[in-house]
Every structure is written in structure tokens, then in C-alpha cells.
Amino acid sequence: MLKDKKVVIFDMDGTLIESIGVWNDIDKELIKRIGSIDIDNIDIGKQRDEKLKEYSNTNDAYLEYCGFLKEKYNSQMTKEKIKKLRYEIANSYLAEVIDYKPNAEELLKYLKQKGFILVIASTTNDCTIETYKKYNKNIINKANLEDTFSLIYSKGAVKQIKPNPEVHYKILKELNVKPDECLIVEDSIIGVEAANNANIEVAVMYDKYSDCNREEINRLSQYQFQDFSEMLKHIKNELGD
Image (cartoon, rainbow, N blue to C red; front, side):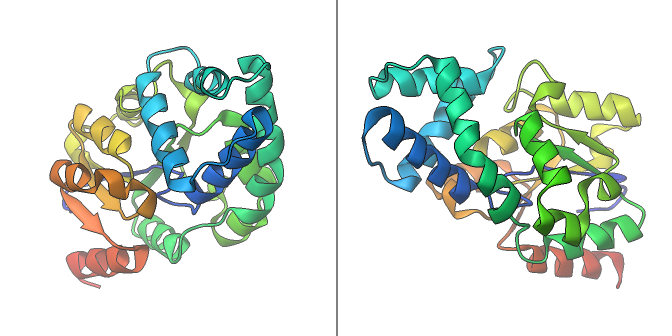
């Protein structure tokens, strides 16, 4: 899996951190406020993923997603105001609730100690990443983003988000590496598709919110892991530790 590899590229939400459920809670609260409707968290996540994929070629996929919510739930608010409200609701969750998945920081520290270049390629909003960097004590105390990763690319770094491979092409150019010198770690179907579109091998970290696409995710990925403990054990065996 890591033979001849130099760079390991991580997705953020749902891969490194326990956040998909939190974003579902945030969107559930948002929908209740704009449309007075209660919706199941799994359905929220599936709906959001589908719409972000549909709007991935627009200038602001999240703004268009908020426009979709406006129309679906008959809100009188503009999509701009809905997007602003979404991040107001999210602030406390982002700084206090979100945390790394179990053993994720152990894997990151091991890979860095072994000399791998670590990168984040995320569709997460830029200001959200800044919150993780500056205010989220769970992340700061376990594996500070700026000290751990050589490059951190969030949504604003590219014009087209995953499954478009633009972010991966940018990483290849910036680090002057080839696709076969990289490994991508993802959790979702759009992330796996982005890896495939960039011709880079992908390892999938299990996240229950992607179960609706599990068969396709497994078909399109080269490696699958239930958790970071399993992945770390596999890598240590491969590297002879």
C-alpha cells in the first residue's frame, strides 16, 4: 500500500475527524429553523452529499446547497442568509464537539516519523478549517494541523471540488510528485471518485454515513479499513515494524 509512496493525502470530514454526524445535526437544526421540518440524520447526510456532488462545478457548492434547502423547505430567507445561519449554528460544534476518530492522531504521528509527507485535501469551508486550527482543543492537543501537515487545502483552494480531481492535481504540482507516489485516504463516494479521477490509489476509512454507497466505494477503492487502529497495524506490518 505504501511501497514507493512519498505522500499521504487525507480527507478531513468523515475520514480523519468524527464530523459527518455533527454536520447532520447542524443541518437538522438548520432545516428546523428555516422550514419547521424534522428529518432523519442519515437522510440529511445523503441529501447533502448528492447535492454537493451535483453542484461541484459551481463557484460555491455550499451556497447552492443552501439554495436547494431554501426551495425544498419553502424558506423566505435568501440562500446567502441560510448559509450564514448554517455557520452560526455550527460554531460551537466546530470548536468544542468535533474530534479525531480513534487512533487517527497515532497514525498521523507514525507516518510523519517515518518521513511521509502528509497533506489535507478537503471540501470543508476555509473558515471551518481555521476554526479547527485555532480553537478546537481536541484537534490542537492531539495532532495540531499546522505542525502535522505540509499542505492543507480546503474548499477555497480550488474552483471545482471533489469528485473533480483539481485539488489532487494541485498537490501533485506543488510537491512535484507523481500519482503513483501518493496514497489518498477517504471515506465517501465523492472522495473515492476524486482519487480515481486523479489516478491515485485510495484507502477507505469506514464511516457509517457512507453505508448507502458502500458497495460502490469498495469497488472503486484499493484498500478498506474499519478504523485507524486496523490501518496502523497494516502499515506497521508492511513497513516491518
